Image (cartoon, rainbow, N blue to C red; front, top):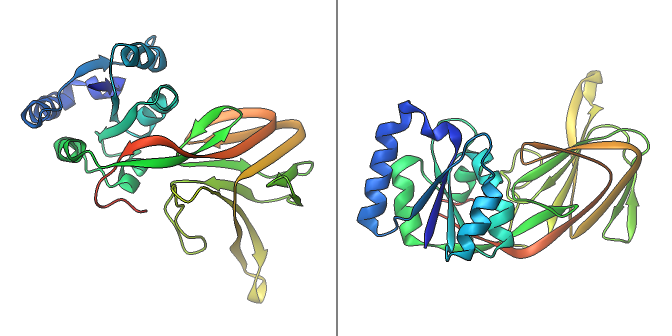
Length: 247
């Protein structure tokens, strides 16, 4: 049974025609289901947990990356499959990586139901699908795979799971059982020009601690703690993907 979670912005009048077209296509394809509409004081987690108890097996985020982030923890914890219908032009990175087209065309992918068991990152009991960022400063203690320490005072740490590649690092692979630790920093090159370089290490767990609060961005949200326990949980999330996925 499908359960559709509409983000608050999706309910704007400018999306009325698109929502109607999507819901008609859902019915045509036999994937219609109950709809929940998020609002300021409606918690997606509570709604999803209750609906899974009533028999929902597939949770669909209707919106963007932020919408998907709202449903990941409760849906994955409850063992439900997860999909997305992208609406709106901005903040659609994860849908693009999963190969999910925008709007009505996403219904075709949902109906095909190509499900992949995806690894997820775990930071202090909080799941993340895409990536996390930590600005470096002196005083951080970093222990990798419970066996060796890294020294890092400047730059940025990225923890990448499902992520596009660039000129320096390859795409993140969310089915390889590892999380990519990337340390980015700048150094002087020829003629004193600065260039960005990176250290890239696949690993299974990471422990970071500091006397001061560590600020971390996780899939766009802010998280703070003095101690971070980071690991990869293999095959923890059942995601509906399209044929143009990046992995």
